[in-house]
Length: 265
Image 1: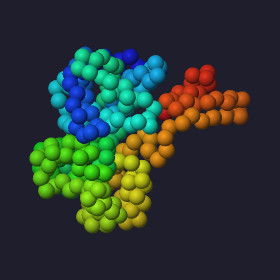
Image 2 (image 1 turned 90 degrees about the horizontal axis):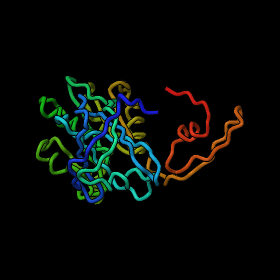
Image 3 (image 1 turned 45 degrees about the horizontal axis):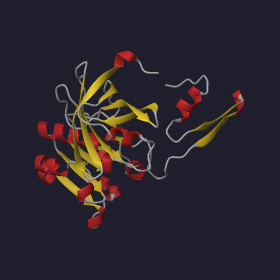
């Protein structure tokens, strides 16, 4: 259930395609912007097949007075959120939450490596801008299928120069995350956002190198992308409950709607 004090109406100000299948959407919250930091995300109320639902999106860039920006990848095999977001036009109205940050950049560290895979660039853009503005020592490794499909590439090159390295699969240039981690200075902090396979490899290499867990910070997509969404059954024998979870809902939502008393943190 939404806490009304944390949600507000917003109006779309502009949209632009930042890659063939990625659209940036800029909107202004009616209550005015809440202070946020790089790595933050917001929840957005969407309509999927005529039903209200919620999706979470990272905020792009550094805070800008009165404006939020998100970048949404159009997914044909999705639960419907991206189709709704791509349908928005200037003047469209929607409901958004206050920003939250579970992937916060810790400034003032000796050195940083930022790693982004595909649409995982969205929270990383703001981090790179903050570090560049502060004159911090860092590099950004950006991975994707091709340069054409990589959002914000030109802006990043203009801002970061040789601190940005591109790993485009169609050019035969793939990131070996284990080798990258092995070559880092001991006190480097790694911030990573991307698909599960990249995150799994990074966590394994980081732990194998004996590096402190607190120096690896990451965020990944809600869906690993390995499988198309499909409905499934859930049975709770202790309560005699058996329900089907639709493609566009979480198990928690489905249990709540079935009348189950679910506690979570």
